[in-house]
Image (cartoon, rainbow, N blue to C red; front, side, top):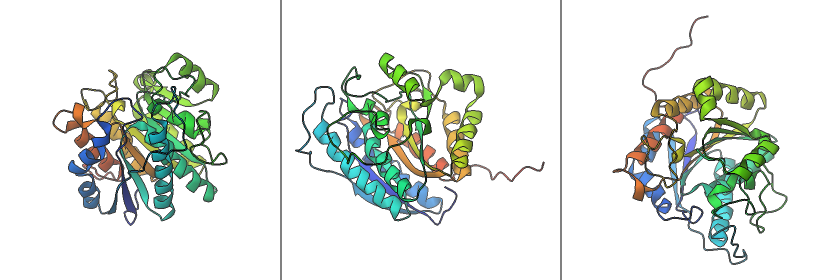
Length: 311
């Protein structure tokens, strides 16, 4: 992300139907009000705001008790996949402004299609309290925002939302950091599929910097594109309260910024999701400002320049 000649495309996703509660649809507006476009412009990027996607519900998708609001989430998935793919294919860096985490069904699928055309693998860095590897037959709630990783890895059975022959992400190329809430059946699935999971204990024992450097080394060795998906609940609720799925014991403000700074230094990030921001639950816009600050760090905002150390 060090090439400031790049264009950044902001894509608003006012989607809350995957979460089972209202509020996330206001997320894109809150992120814009918190100044995400100006923050990236100030860093020297060309910022293109593509507005909000607002697809009509998909009439061809059935009602499913175990996948609530599938007609709405499915329609968004199709629109997001197409728009993310289009932005990336045009040489831009897609930044998805969410919206609940079901939006990643579309954003990651779009980037997977782009990566396939480049004949490169796609890796996903999933910064979240939850693994989101449920399928309709394993989900306790039926809320689709708990299923996107299984979906883009080809492990969740839905009605035909996207083409069956679309490229999937290899679960072994998914790196989940900050995990601290996993359903029992989901625990088995992520183990069976060899998803790389670094829970909060791993972070406490090994350190955030060490873990992220290890992940980036794997991405670089594979010559892969890297999609980053940042959920507000990755952060400790004391840092960012504006989310409907708070889980105590999350990442600190400083740990989150370290991740973003290391990602920027790597130059490997191709696309970004900012998800699960619920302004209705926020404290005077604090969580929105934190997410904008983190995005700015990912795109190169820093306090001091850090020259390469002499050996």
